[in-house]
Image 1 (cartoon, rainbow, N blue to C red):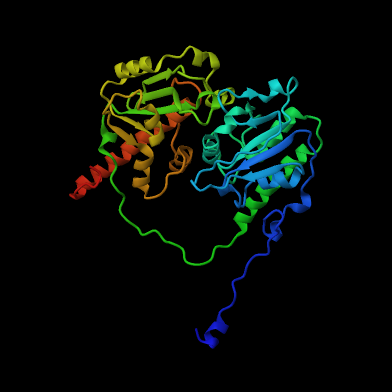
Image 2: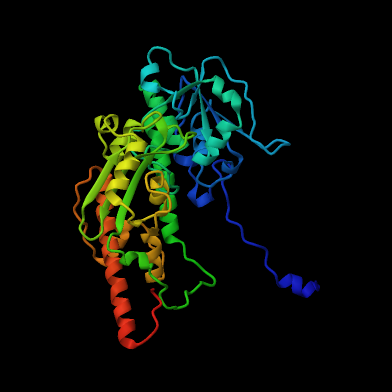
Length: 405
């Protein structure tokens, strides 16, 4: 490159960074971080993808708990996450395994000397657990969060899942309720989240932006016109809150789109049931779960009720979970996809669609959270049917070939 051209290129501008908390200097957290001395030692086994994540909470734990140790499970020659640690006697693994003991029950009689916590997304934590068989030899403990996670930047997959820092604070509040500084540690976490959300809202975006090209709405599925169409919703959970176990269907509800006649089955789990927190979140009473039917009986009942009717749900996930109840080969339709095709835009959650289109919830006789979700699904399905009918009529009147059939 000629010298005169090279001189015209300015060096890249990098934001000054605090290399203690690894945040940009103007968002530095160090000034308000507490130092919390705990009786329980804390060890964190971290997935390598989490090490440099800008919103990782394990770094905050390391800065606020002087005795905490963070070990990164770097992949070995085989590319796995195997990382054996030399841990003191009395170490317990804080992990939501089906056989884990509730911390509230063991805190007074036999408290762990050290807590080992897996850090990463829940998918990463599960891989760490699977690829480190030595973890199974540790005593497993867990707790039931008193409130949903406040980690508003990264969405948790289940309502009773919390971030690493929140898990450590809750565990220490059970083991050491008199330890000073734990509320300050939670407050530091909240400040990090609040400041980042404020920063996201204040950033000006530069450069080119992609503009959507206008295009005609794509087709709405003919299945929406079927007179016997059934709208369904499924609730599932992991047995006992064990994230390593396969999910089980625990509630299957459905309604006929024309008459509104409803069907509901609470299904007795084959393994451990959902955690009490998850049961409360779904709005299912424990006695209803104990008195539920078997999966085979639910399948038989639904076959008698629905017959060969096609089934639609707001998301494909509900259809996937309910496929163990539906007859093989049942015609299916995803309402969320149909809506996105109609409006040529992302749908978002069904509650947003209800507000956007001014739709009213359809009353039904089901229980728990499924009652609201099924009523919303019925409202959207009926509205989509009317939109498809209006479009077909307009195209017929104009003598144009239908793009919706």
